[in-house]
Length: 194
Ligand SMILES: Cc1cc2nc3c(=O)[nH]c(=O)nc-3n(C[C@H](O)[C@H](O)[C@H](O)COP(=O)(O)O)c2cc1C
Image (cartoon, helix red, strand yellow):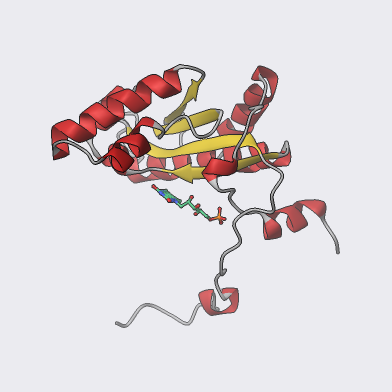
């Protein structure tokens, strides 16, 4: 059996962020991408995620704030590192933050909500790729720092699933070794015995 969707899934990969160029997806394409991202398993229909779009000048403003935050935490930065922070969100024409936004629930644990966010991120990536765009999802140091998350627009109870960098891309992607899948599965043989 042949399936273009299976072929697509078996060849997908990420693009190098510096090679993502304008144009970014249009507003209509972004709405399509986010509709796909929202159509994921979500125990209890809690919608425990949301999306933040970083595009235009705001990307440079964020870079300045990240450089300031890095300097507050680490002291004066060498020029190369400072430039790296300044450019964090401006390398691709569009960055979509996938934010895990857990809801209070008596039965559904927070980790399930976080996993649903991971699924949303993967659907987002797949949809953007299906529309012909290159993508690369990163988290980076500011995702693990409360002040970093706050300046990027997250509330204290929220966490970063990933910042998905999106842009036009005509390369072949970053190929890397893939798992030996045959080693990753087996039939069930009984309870774990240590
Ligand atoms: C949750 C998550 C966070 C990541 N954060 C980073 C990161 O901060 N920096 C980085 O260089 N790569 C990061 N990566 C890896 C990139 O996404 C990487 O380019 C990608 O895994 C390549 O694999 P692919 O070609 O199968 O998409 C992260 C991946 C995941 C799943």
